[in-house]
Image (tube, rainbow, N blue to C red; front, side):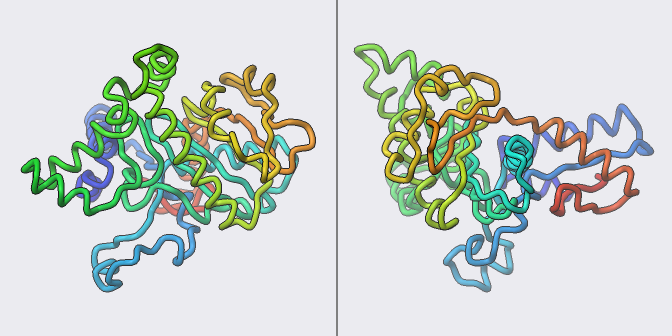
Length: 307
């Protein structure tokens, strides 16, 4: 029931997850331990000044309105994997992780911990995504409500399922389709969608470089981040000023596997590290069950426990 009550916060994910829990319980029975690994757990270290919204504080406190962040399992995995690859203690890792797929988010990592992330109270905030709008002036909703006669639920459905790359291009939420269309003479909207996607991501990189006071690397992961060299190149274009020139050959060859894609001698490195959320969930499950029932802190954050 508690999970069901949170369905509206992540409508593309929470309801199906609850259905999976119920189906598993029916098949396996009530005595089989079930473990929930929450995607928000890694972000519990975000400081108050970064997770607070500038709205009346009593209202925010009453309803728990703050930045929670998502994709935490993915951001945590690539942070830990980067530390392994580089032979660096996790508490010395200062990087920006970019999970770019149908859902997309950026996270600032300082000392191996999340200190800011682009998704907020829900996964709707932040970067442009496949069907989600990302950052948006909230007054636009009032305009659309008045002029289109749309309810709040209809507006939220539009922002979650008909916006982002799909809304900008009018064609597809799939970056592969947009890259193909952009190469053609009728590809103006596809090109615009790609440009907005890359520009928004580059803005977040700049913001997080400032928030961190510099970083050691940018790490790309997720379906787009791991497999789209052209998108990585467009995102990093213009970051030479901060010491990040890409190596075109390395970037072009890095499709679906770990690789450093920045040029030799880069002050700010760029890496591709495929995520493995399933592996991290399995590890957290083992830790949770080994520690007994109840709430655990696997992986350095609350949110892993028996369900």
